[in-house]
Length: 309
Image (cartoon, rainbow, N blue to C red; front, top):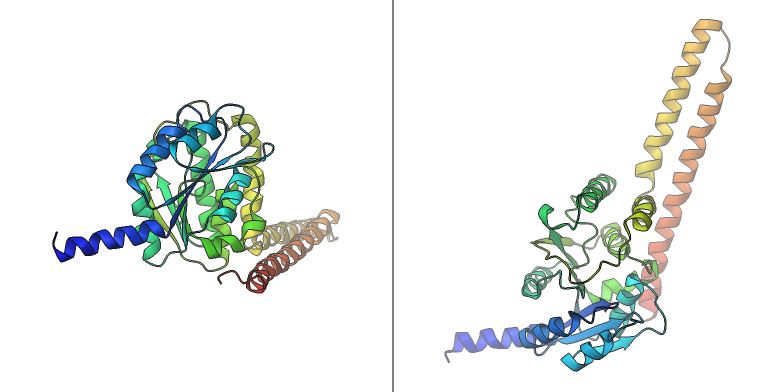
């Protein structure tokens, strides 16, 4: 073996020894063993963690048998909670999160890690438009991406993808912000962008999942608005509240001018619209200060605990 090949193998080994792969799993006994086996073969030096979210089947046993380190929740806490548990228990510098249902191709992991090594703190596997499970979900994700891009001023290719690689230190800073449900990708993406951490994207194709989806279209469709509000409050509230305030002020001004020209009197409706515009502006201003305070306290707490900055 020549010197170049030996150096390449050494770099691969170093990369794997600095990598943790976390799979949140709930009732995935059909596929979890095969996924872990493939990961163990492809990345023998990598730490593989399966967080079993109190599955009712043999998910934990299958994962353990295949060679993963299994952490069990005492009760079902949610996908986001499993992600947080995995991040806390990971011991390597770079952490890759991927679904345990067979949607994500393990051969794409090295592409995400390559992007992290370019200097990005968060790298998202951006799914192509033809890989969403349904037209409803694809349209919802598209709308979320557009809205988030407008709110942040950054082009966001896939806000909700669960296939992502992060630097563990910065990710731990925002752990307290992450919800326990399925909207953790949205929250973590907005938190990284809001704090100035570089976010990159790698195009991927997702497979059809094995088994039944844990996402309920009615329940999670209702959460769409909640996610939109989280996007607003986690990044820059004034980007939403300021235009809304100006809109109501303009409506009030128009109503006042029209009514004054017609009657020579002040319009009560114009007064209501003026007051509403001021209230919206003040709510946005307060939200902006709370958001800044949250991120400031997060970084201060991280430094006090000795976590990486």
